[in-house]
Length: 166
Length: 166
DNA sequence: TATTGTTATACTCTATAACTATA
DNA sequence: TATAGTTATAGAGTATAACAATA
Image (cartoon, rainbow over the protein chains, first blue to last red):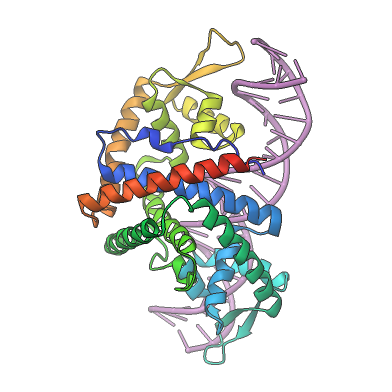
């Protein structure tokens, strides 16, 4: 599986006298990358897919009525060209379909096919098991608290980012 | 700066009945990606550099005695070939240097040059400001708590990952 | 034999920008 | 003019594997 050299702390660069914010950011990055590496690696070896593809299918699963390309682009936080490329792949594999949007002939709705739904459900279950295991070091109470803090951090960062849009 | 379509929640895929662990993971990923996007974008436009290059220099700054290639590889959690590529670039730009390691003629120590130190210090200060701003939505108390929870999560995940090495 | 580091390669992800076709 | 989506391109980022030199 080649989980490479995973013994680390990128965080070692955050010295004790540094601002908390910087230490949080580095720890956040380390945690995310550790989990991401496991998830990516397993998605590839066990399901021949990637995290962006999984994310896209996950969004579609959340929206059974389908999503337009630009909605996917916004939800996944990537630019349009990338969404086109991923949807092209998934469509070729029969996992998603492009349906004409009657109200706007420029657009269509992307939906999971039956096969895509089955495939996603299967992956999602495994995916969740991996993550549950990786995060099982925290008690339920701690998990709730972490969830809450991340939500606050997220909302605030989102505001800042919106303001800074040039 | 093209912060693309940043209005989102990848997290919308985590339904309320899902396990907490999955929701934490998705929120973690969203938070990290939001910050990462800003940091990457600014490192590129303002300093003509990238996050992995910054990370590598940050590690060297933490280790003034220098680091071997395989130590860098471990600390940065990437494979050797990638470290070689980044060190090659930075060396060409005069920011790091390869010093012979007397005790092992296969190896050398990589160190920041004076110019590299100056360059890194400059970037690190700006980098810290960006992050402080993005995370300023949390009180000091909350930041401490978040730091603690992430530490626990990290340690536990690290153990799991070490065990799962094939 | 194992380890250090390099080289070569291939694939995914991503942003940018120019393009088309509708609106 | 503006918007939906596509195409083309270039550069990151990363993993893999074969290799040379040394241990």
